Length: 251
Image 1 (cartoon, rainbow, N blue to C red):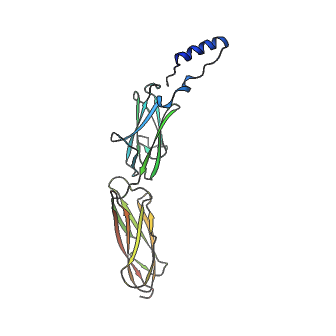
Image 2 (cartoon, rainbow, N blue to C red; image 1 turned 30 degrees about the vertical axis):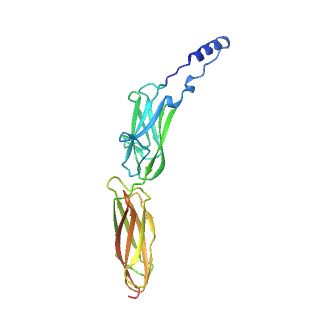
C-alpha cells in the first residue's frame, strides 16, 4: 500500500482541534505527489531513448521505480496507446495493458512497436491512483529491398484492359511500416503514340505491398517500362522495373 503519514505539526494541531469539537481527519494520501510514488523511464540497450522503429519487432524496456511514499512489491500497471507489451497471454485481447508485481522497488515491462508510424506514443505506469507517463515515437521503417511484378505482361491498348502491378517491399529486420510511399513512372520504348494511365504513387499496406493498375490507349503495339521507386533504409533509393506490352487496337 501507499505509505500514509502525517507531518508532526499537522498531527498535533489536528488532535487538539478534534478534542474540542470532534472531527474526522482527511486521508493524508491526498497530499502525496505521484513522483514520490512512481517514476517512469524508457530504455533501449541500457540507454534512455524516445524513439524506435515501427517495424513490429523493435522494442524498449519500460522501467517503473517506486518512490519513498510507496511500499515495495506493489502492483504496477503499465499502459500504452500503441504497440503491445511482451509476455501477455495469447488469449488476452488487450495487448496494451500489462500488470506486474514490483521486485522490491522496481517493475519492468517490454513494449514492442507496431507497424504504423506514430509521432507520439504515450506510455504510463500506475500504482493505485498514482501515475507517471512518458512519450516516444514510432519512426518509419523503410525497406532494404524491392520486387516488382504484374499479373499480366500484355494488355490491349483499348483503355479498358488493365494489368495490376505490385511492388513488394522487404526489410532485413521486421516489417516495412504501413503507408510507405512508392512512386511509379511509365516510359514507352518506341515512338508510337500511346497514352498510358498509371497512378504516380501508392502507399504500402500491412503486407508490405503496393498495388496499382495500368491501362493504355494507342493504335500500335508498344512496350512500356513501369518503374517503382522508394526510399531505402539507411539512405538512398530502391528502384525496380518491369516491361508491359500494350497491344495496339490497329497493330
